[in-house]
Length: 394
Image (cartoon, rainbow, N blue to C red; front, side, top):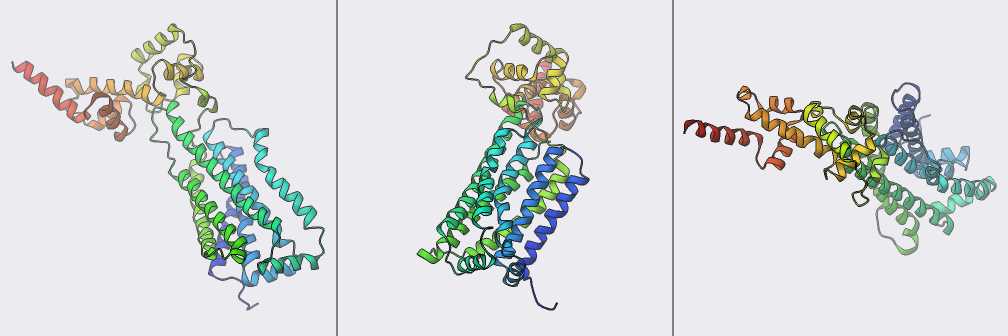
């Protein structure tokens, strides 16, 4: 019982395993919110728990011998999780950024590599005797591995990298499209999700380099310290899991999703817009001033106008040549100008003006005002009253 099984680096892997198992249990038993997102995240965390366990078995000095003494199958079985974690993270991100996300048949294509490797593992590995399995493992540890195993290892790294790139593209698409549905983007905090996606992309690039190092170091002298890279990746994953747990616990239930169908609204494919609808929108914006609501969204306005969201989005994009974010905030800028020109507001602060006009933050207020008017709100008020006082004086 006094034998040292784990070193400091192994402890980092154990912490990652513990975090993943504990939070996945929390997600499926306690946490409220989008059930499908919680299940996908829990599945991702379980696959992440299996990966450091696979690392311990394959590279842990003492732990490897203890695990293999139990069963040689442990050498490969947890490695199957590498084929699951990348598509699970991708689908989790999609479940956050798209409204009413549902798993489609096409999504199962991401799991075909896992199924193929599982079948290969079943018929190529499990049928071997324990003695044969141990010989294969010993040869692998000595740098003598089958070409098929090398191809699988590198293909795995490429597949995970591919899913990471798609995740980054999806996030970029979301960031670009969110302005078509909300008038205030300040409440949409993408920082934690960006860190997560870019962080795991870094881990997968690192894994690609490690895969090349492990598979070709003995043959062509691929001169790289892949052990250092692997350790860096392990600590990075531990850090990323901490971020995921901390932020997803508070953000996943309130994440503002976008309508996937609106992404297909293209300015190139013009649709016939009824003049009555345009007039209805303009009159409603002029007299009802829905933009004074800080939390106005495309769905909110569409409901008030009794127009389908997709139709409203098409009109805003094609007729007004703006996204929803720009469309609403131009009205807020005009309202701000009226407030700044009113003698009743001569002692009102810019925060008061901003709030009354419907802006949510001072940054958006100043940026949009200067973009449309050509000067800051403070400068506009100063110039306006200087000009009018001069007129009154003359």
